[in-house]
Image 1 (cartoon, helix red, strand yellow):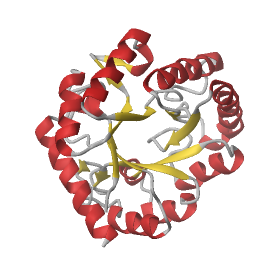
Image 2 (spheres, one colour):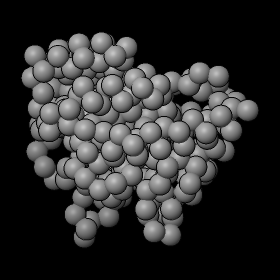
Image 3 (tube, helix red, strand yellow):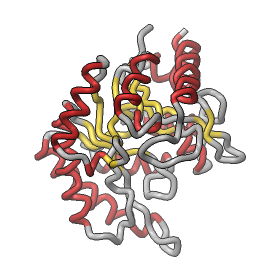
Image 4 (cartoon, one colour):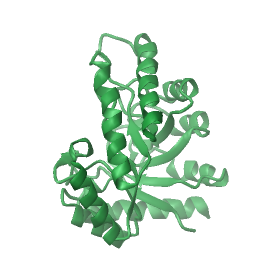
Length: 270
């Protein structure tokens, strides 16, 4: 069975040629663009985006989305930053032939509980979704530790109240928040657009290859596949220390991550 694999290629290297040639060699067909040349996708110029698309095409690769950092800031920050950011991310998406933009649901001060910012988060994301619709892109929310939507229940709250918002299911982020991924899947399965693939050990929070932690990847993949799931398994290995925009997973470790994912998918799909 053929799976739709994609990846944050900037984990391999800051050099897109090495990024994309590694993905081609490992059979990963698409990229979720987060960065290149030590720059965030939000900082890339139109000419740089055009060059990236050309390099990717030379390796037979496409782009399935933009991994923006939108919503990865405190809810107290000026709302216009995030709203304008949607336009920037949408322009980047169109430049590489994608229509999806990953977003987050905002940090908050330690003395403030998540319930107290709920209305503000929903309003802020609602404004961002309006701009996304005008700009011809879809916003996909990722569960990230310490943002409003870091638990299954709060992610569900967001997608139910914001029907235009999709969900990216990140296993290790749920594990690191003390969540049961099987319970999260039961709540969110009807809203999941794609998976971010990294696993983690609950006791330590350490990120490990797919299937080697407590994320129940095989069982959740099996349930998804049996239900007709046919979208991306997006690799975000995080298998060694390093910066966000390159070098945090060497080509060798990236191969370990791809092999682990393929093994879990093979077991889940059999």
